[in-house]
Length: 372
Image (cartoon, rainbow, N blue to C red; front, side, top):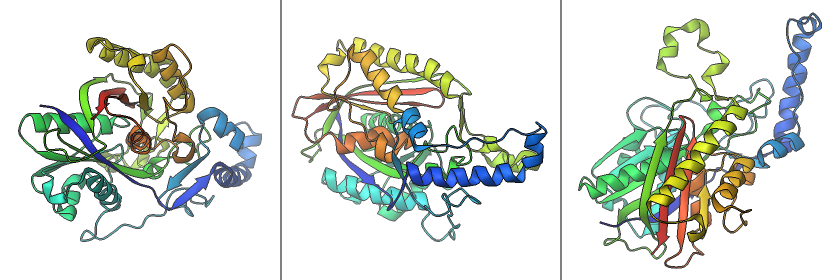
């Protein structure tokens, strides 16, 4: 049974923050912090905070701007997080709202209606609640049949979700699936941390998965093969969870937001990524040169280009490895799907593409696709 990605959708928030805007707010916070702790800094008990700069951000990441759900709170040096009011239980949650927007576009792209869908998977890094599942809420909002569930494999959630949807269809448990990746990453980012305050942006993506036989889309991609790997690591971690309430002394500690050891991640994760993809290609008797497009996880420009060069054995072209990181920043699970959504329609029938994710866990997802 051939399974295809028959449609994709993208929700982009209305607000964008440039590096310059972010740096101004961060440096204002640095001034406030250093002034408040002046005596302790002079005594050597506290380390003074350093300024950030747009040049530092671009050099470290390749990011120039990012979209966010809410802008003013992030740029307020006394607050430095998105101001998002809690909604009543009767109202759609924010993840549901942006997930539905992306799903509606994906369904239109696939030539499908919500009533055709009998499986909804919400796959993302940062779920806003434990239960009920955001996927079931979206299922209800759209009017889909069947069942739904949430899953989290951090930045690899989208590829793992697509794999799970394809498996469900092959097993006869579903006919048509929506895999949705709503990412409000600004809510788990420490905007007071110079090493990571610039990394993430908000977005939502969605794809429709169904059999090739039932597909109506002119821009569908056959899923040739998938390969997934995980390996435990603490180098990318977020300790926020319901058990924090049982330890109020540390409930608001900085480890309840995104933390990473960037150097170790680069050193350890990239070899796992390239080895996994190389193994995948070898198993299918294919080479990187057989692929027209590489939709890679949009985490960091150096990481993207390093992985592509390692696979191809040469510098990749901009056409081969599309970059959306510069304007969207790292959008966690949604990054490679954004690249796919924006840079797939020019491929011709028979062209192959590789969709890959990698991130916390560690986790790696590799998907070999071919244009119908």
